[in-house]
Amino acid sequence: AQKITQTQPGMFVQEKEAVTLDCTYDTSDQSYGLFWYKQPSSGEMIFLIYQGSYDEQNATEGRYSLNFHKARKSANLVISASQLGDSAMYFCAMSHNQGGKLIFGQGTELSVKP
Amino acid sequence: EAGVAQSPRYKIIEKRQSVAFWCNPISGHATLYWYQQILGQGPKLLIQFQNNGVVDDSQLPKDRFSAERLKGVDSTLKIQPAKLEDSAVYLCASSLGGANYNSPLHFGNGTRLTVT
Image (cartoon, rainbow over all chains, first blue to last red; front, side):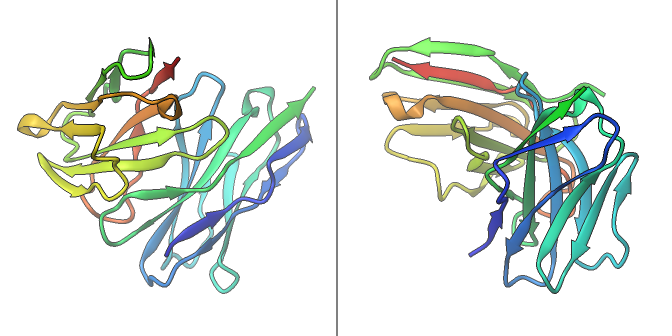
């Protein structure tokens, strides 16, 4: 069975510093995708970044990058130059090639301090 | 491009009552999902549609929950009768890539249900 684990319930970071949010996954599939979503207090789920299991380079999207270690089954999100607006819940999710649905982790609450 | 639309935004009902949620996906998105997000947890898939057919409803409590997607566009999720543990945010999402594993899901703002 597939599983996503986020071991950090809450994280604090100083404004303008970088922060890493951890995510490990478990799957026996060869083809899968890893996603990160941001959920502000308003509730919407905002897609941030995607990494495919066959992608050799780490994905980057602006201030977001994904550190992908396939052998360790980890897909950590790095946010550079944190901003106050980055304060939110962050969810790691995984899809597989049968159906495309996403399985989510428990989330990490990030608080950015001024 | 208009996003995923959901209504209502909030709903408060008493246990044993019924409730319905509506979702309109992004135009052209063939795949539609309903997720349940209990406070403090990640979203959990309830049901997945591909066009107007059900792909996965293995985690839908079918004794009280039902969903339909007529004509392969809009969808409704119904709970009857509601229980206290159904209090959650119900998120609708859609994707362009069908059943492919590399298509991000685009979410609506959700419906926050409180059962008293």
